Each structure stands twice: as structure tokens, then as C-alpha cells.
Image (cartoon, rainbow, N blue to C red; front, side):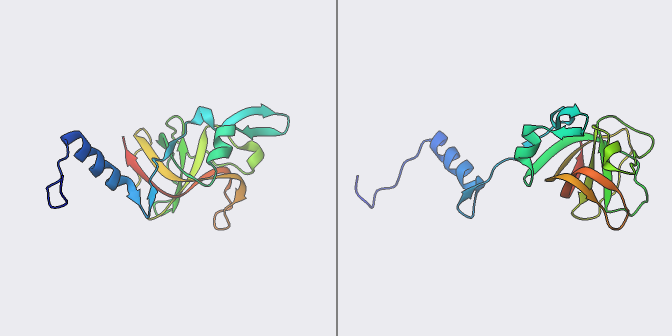
Length: 154
């Protein structure tokens, strides 16, 4: 074959090249967000409280996606909400992380979004943070957070 001859690619090879080009970003291959469920957040409960699972520890600082329900927000213009494993009529507000339920995650939005009814299943994507932290604006104490998040109804 000479250099001036057209290159022949099979349909499968062409689709593979297109797919490869679509996921290449800055010379790196983009990875899908890891899925994390409420059952995978904690490894065990001890006398010292909840202990994070190995999976949660390994995903700390990375983008993850979770499914659940939005607890009713404290106010209409809040920059965060609580993701719950089951639909709740009231926001599960805790005074300290020692009271932290094992089936909620605080979600801080990257930008304001319209909240949804508490019975609607949503998928949240954000960066996982673990460890006790107190929000300076609200005083809300959390063990787990998703930062720079966005959500979609499912």
C-alpha cells in the first residue's frame, strides 16, 4: 500500500476510534463516576461510632454517584440538601456527628437547582468527603458529604 492510498477501516474499527476519542480528555482517559450505595458507606458500628468502609475510604476525594431521596430542605434557597436512603417527611437534622444516622449524606450543590418532592428518586454526582465537619453557616455537623454536586431525577 502506498502512502497516497486511502486508508480502509472496518465499521467496528471506526466506531472504536470514535469512542476512544470521545473519552480522551487532556491525554487522560475519562473514568465514569464510581457508584456508591448507602450500604457501602460504613464497614461497622463500634463503641466509638460508625466506621467508614474500605470502599468509602478509597473513594474519598473522588467523584461518585449515589441514588436516594431528597429530604425536605431547611429553606427554599439552601445551597445544600440531605440525601436519604428512604423518603422522609422531615429533614434528619443532627446536633453532633455522634448522632449521625448511617443512611444520610449531605449534598452541597455546585450551583443552585430546583428541589424535588421528597418521594422522587434522584441520582446525585459529586466529590465524596469523609470525616466530621461543621458547616460554618448553618452549624450542621456531617460525617459524609458530596461537594460540587448536581442531581437528576431518575
